[in-house]
Length: 229
Image (cartoon, rainbow, N blue to C red):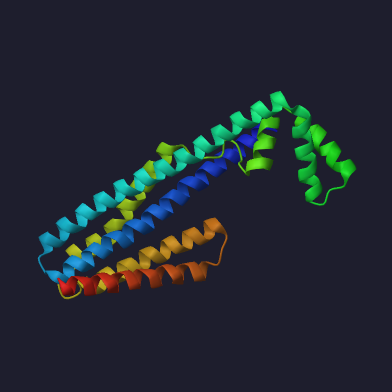
């Protein structure tokens, strides 16, 4: 049983790493291309565009990293607080906690007799605190990603995602750099949409189309903003 729980937690961690990576990559793509289109519409100087894009790429990567670290840290702190609270509840009022578990399964349509049996068996196990934390707070103990793993994953993917439009804009021939950048963004955001849909088991076509539309809108807005400068 312990081995199965451990494997499940490990898979959850892997999924969280991928989630942080996909979000970071998508944010890196759209943030960097936004700056590139604004600056590129205002000037044709490649060095200026490159410096602006690089500065934004670094800022975006660090921002995503800090955000993921803070978010996952809050999740871990919440779990720790819930565990401490339920451990205290078990110590001070064990019978009430059994009734809570019993009521939980009754609310799900389980008969009173079966709910009594389930509650008794679960509360006799060593991981009864985990049972209470899950039932009362909706938290699966031990399945939160390490904050540093989330931070590194998000930072690396944001930087990598931002490189696609940056390279296209600064190194493509002058007469095709806009088209190259647009294609780079469409392909990259489409890919992140596909991956996110697979992770979330949602409609792939819708996710890809949504990301592409958002990417095109982002480029259009920043391009016209750059022309106003």
